Image (cartoon, rainbow, N blue to C red):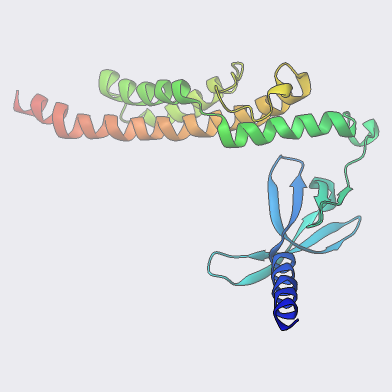
Length: 212
């Protein structure tokens, strides 16, 4: 009997530890998923406790208008999003789930490799080939603007749910995040290309010209 009592006590402690460490999930309208302990929900905001990397805990809040749903540690979901075209909510709840899934997959899996290579090459090539040392700062915004226009192609292997392939709402969400991600990455790549181009001109090309 003592053994059974001890075993039961251990199970109870284990269950309490698991429930204490379980996290609630806050799904935002941009597809971001926040895992934290929710301490309050209202029509104005969702308040939660965020654990930092150093172990400290701080209270934060998200406006309810940017929250799609809150799921507690038991899997019970409270949806804050509502369909209303007057407020610009043109998708119903199921369609918005597909849209958010596309945003999430793009955030974690979309990789604009070739656009980044092109932006790097443009930054480095214009500085090296045309001696655009003074005008080089015009290259990144122009490159980023150009990269905002083309269609976003889904990165192979980034779709976590194959049933979403061909879904227009999923594709729209994927493109929304993918396009902004491509613009930012290409902006950074063009700045890196300019830095490399300036280094090549200052350390390799210009000394040779001065010597001649």
